[in-house]
Length: 213
Image 1 (tube, one colour):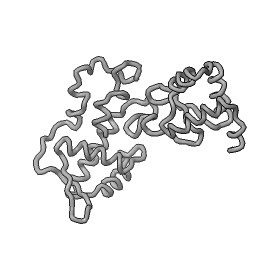
Image 2 (cartoon, rainbow, N blue to C red):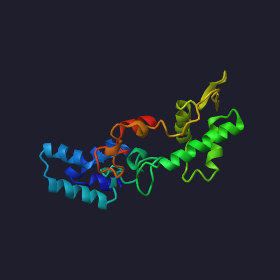
Image 3 (tube, one colour):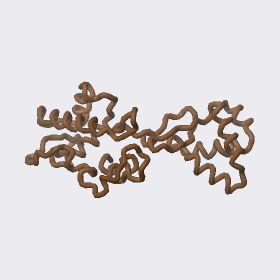
Image 4 (tube, rainbow, N blue to C red):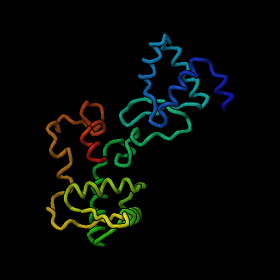
């Protein structure tokens, strides 16, 4: 394959090097176009270069959850931030609130039933239930635990050996799990469009990104 790369014309090698730098985050086609236009390359020549690289299976085009086209090396898997991640529906590419809610409830119930538990224990328990309709990593479960702690339902306990445990908070207000989501108190909620076509939508909402971080 290296011989194939070495035989590429100059413009195609330039495109390939630009794509390589972005790794699995991808290079936005529009950014590439503007960059190479400033260097004197015509749009038609750039389009042909990209198509040839795709035909040779050296790079590929990925359409993100925000409907943007990005280029990346053919063998790479897109970063989850491009395709929506765990908490977005694979079919609709929209934020799957029902899925988050079900995992939230399951994690809370497991801790409630077992008093003091570890992240690994919670991950094993949730992954073995019907709630986990897709693979959940420790990081995914931790994001839900953080939400439960933010809601005042769980507390984290540090031990001398560095192990962390989670248990019910001594006191908590038993409100609806999603009463404190950004959407619940958003002042522009009526303008939000989950299809992603509107400037205000869950896919690009900075408050939603902070909430899930």
